[in-house]
Length: 380
Image (cartoon, rainbow, N blue to C red; front, side, top):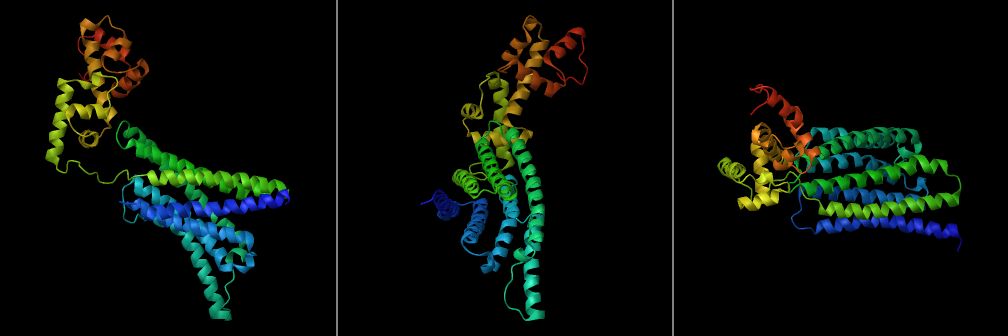
């Protein structure tokens, strides 16, 4: 068997794996217990991807003119990826399971293409008596290509929105029990983007440049192998993903219970001063309060609109300000003051202190020493 024939068989096998991987995940999700709404969105997305991959496989073995309807369906499903991409991530990031008006915009390329296909077929049938379906993608290939431009732009815009939300969540959820879900979603997003860029890179770049058939087969084999590996990883991330903003079980449901728990947190801050421990985590504080980390984390966020670490660092800054004004600590260095206040490094101490007060710890100490009364904008 020639090398090119062997490589061609490998390409076909890899295409089959690309179809099989999402099909396997779809099957697993169908039997998953306690499916959430984003799982159902994912199942619909996977069904679309499987159908599209199967049509791509048929396009290799069949003449394009013999499958006109499937060619147009292939384009319709391809542009619908923008809609599913946005819908899946928005259900996780926003916690909204109802229809979002912004989803309509991501559905426009799909609606435009389907309307154009149906319009062409209806025109042929009504005015020319031609019942045969002719592919719009074949007759107007350039138009079909331009339709992908808004899809690519939409993916970029939606992708930037998703990444900004993930970064924002990563900061606000630092140390909380939800951080692992945010981190898993980041890995899902990055993997998905790499798959899209790999496919687009071949479709609009490498495939146009390479003229040597043997070299083309080598590159296709490498890229398809990469996609198969990424799809397996993506399936793992998809399956692990849990809702980020869903309603939590065992969480205080009344404001009275939330107030009571926050009073326990406040009392602990005053009496035990756990923030002086540089290694304090939400789990350690929860053990001290005899509560669950989830309850403590969510209560702090509701009552202060801050993440756990922002709340703890605010107490550390207040402690540092007290020490900087205490004459018995006048011989202490700035680093020592920071360590005494619960910070684990000078850099962190300086950064957090400046964010809270607008100045560095050393400057704050100098101003206090140079005047008897600190200006009102520097709270005690």
